[in-house]
Amino acid sequence: MADLYIALLHHPVYNKRGDVVTTSITGFDLHDIARSAITFGVKKYFVVNPLPAQQEFARRIFEFWMDEGSLEFNWTRAEAFKLVSIKGTLDEAISEVEKAEGQRPKVVATSAKPRTTISFEQLSAELKNGDQPVLLLFGTGWGMADEVFTRVDGVLPPIDGPSTYNHLSVRSATAIILDRLLGR
Amino acid sequence: MADLYIALLHHPVYNKRGDVVTTSITGFDLHDIARSAITFGVKKYFVVNPLPAQQEFARRIFEFWMDEGSLEFNWTRAEAFKLVSIKGTLDEAISEVEKAEGQRPKVVATSAKPRTTISFEQLSAELKNGDQPVLLLFGTGWGMADEVFTRVDGVLPPIDGPSTYNHLSVRSATAIILDRLLGR
Image 1 (spheres, rainbow over the protein chains, first blue to last red):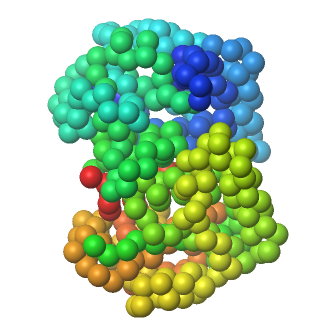
Image 2: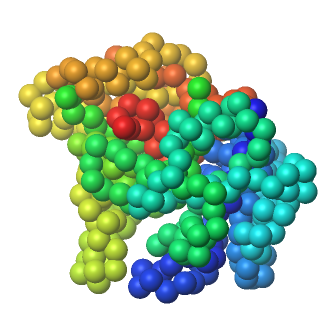
Image 3: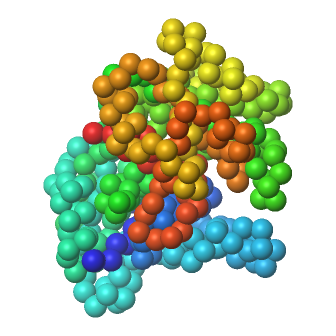
């Protein structure tokens, strides 16, 4: 069984007009994705954002849910937040995995557009039978910039339902992809 | 192919102490679940809450995203919101399905606790090959009250990942369950 890591990138991503920007961290991305990550045995959930004020915002949310009163009211949030690690860049996240695992992870992007190079079944089998750790990337805004895709080792297919609508929230996409890779 | 409907219940649900309460509608439950619903071809997404002020809150969110400026900025939200129907009670939702379909739906609950009476495979096959519409119920707060479970026709299993952590957000659970029933 290989270890799975995930990263949510707030930079470099596109805005609606196709400019490369840094998006804001949202509370629900922290909560929902941390809960999905712990459910499916993800080793660490990297929140990647280069802006110090944004990193500070995320830390304040964690601190709130880790303090004594909140812990008593809802320990499941604090438990999930233990998985989260805030990073300034994707390279820092890759380095942390490499340091923890003793080898470079296979870096796999997700995308709402079809640029598929590896199937869910294939990556799931690699996770279950392999030993190279995997770092799975999720984008925010209007998707990760092309410069990210040029440096990854694989790209998973878009989530395809029966309709042609292709605009899931990143929270829903993460939940579905983790379930497809590691659920049952 | 049978039609699938979903309902998010804000009443009757439990709070942390086990009292039956009405929870508040949250914006992210409207957005994320509407997007998942349209992706997987769900016919209608009922938001069930008996409180007029809560219903009004939901309507204001829809109106904001349906107005001209928002439509131009992000038509995908308005598209997803067309699926949403606000109801005061579960019975009103069941009646609307019955009226649209000419027959009573099979009502199936989801639960984070194991009270399973029907598997994902079984319900998926019924949707793909059957003709009775299905209304799938999701709870908020600390879960739907027992009185809901006594009147449903079936209960799906909890989402089980490799860990014992069992506290997905309702947004993530809905995405995974729709994918298991109707994805690919």
